[in-house]
Image 1 (cartoon, rainbow, N blue to C red):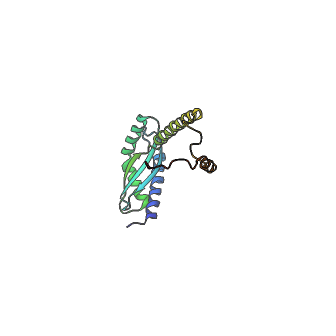
Image 2: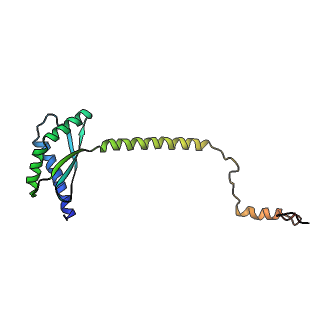
Image 3: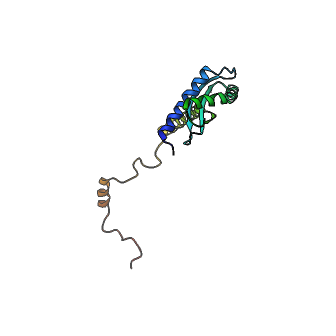
Length: 160
């Protein structure tokens, strides 16, 4: 079992190394405006997943993914040498779609705000179906009991 703190340190180091190598050593023209956002490594330190974002459209994302795939061997050897592990971890690159999720959540929040404003607008014009206060208050109970008289017939059936 590997220490979780050690795994976190290795993952952080992998993120830094990959970002540094992508910035300085990879000269592939397909590589777009890329940001390495996160890296995660398995507990056995054999497989690492590197998350990245790309500024641009789907074509820029596809070309950056192809550039990263072609540079995977060089990145893996650089990471393996720098970490000093017995086995260099395999690298998997995953497009981090956080920006798309943020936009989707913002759209949902805007729709909720619009719906809330509509409900508030309808509630401002609403009127009560019956009385404004449909429940008896404590002061009304005494008034109602005074209105009842002893001449009232008992309820509950036909008495002969």
